Length: 128
Ligand code: ZN
Ligand code: MN
Image 1 (cartoon, rainbow, N blue to C red):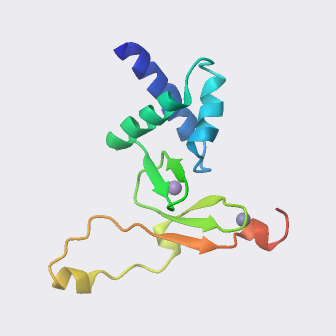
Image 2 (image 1 turned 90 degrees about the horizontal axis):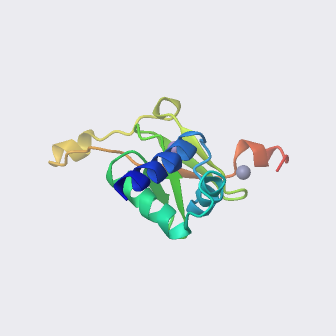
Image 3 (image 1 turned 180 degrees about the vertical axis):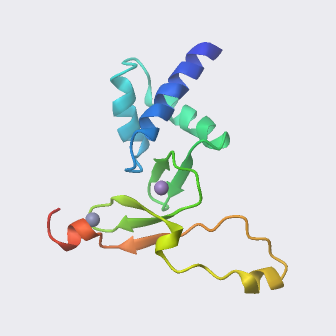
């Protein structure tokens, strides 16, 4: 049982590592089924939860839908409101957030989580 769980989890993790599209659980489920045909959506959800608890993946939730990401270094996101693609945004590409005022007030900032939203560069040139 433990071994089967580990195998399922490894397959799910590798599928997520193989994409930067920040897919939904449904998308991951369809891919996993190609490798493990009898797996259930519930099992995929359960393994995603465990991977998240282990810190191997992150979950992006906009209140409507969860999307998953195997990139766990601190980075930002851009979500297109037209095509719903989610892009990784490197911190270096946007102005640094100034947390000095927070520090002076006694807060310790451990993570900065920013999601930009708008129209992406693909939609803006009308290729969607
Ligand atoms: Zn778009
Ligand atoms: Mn990401």
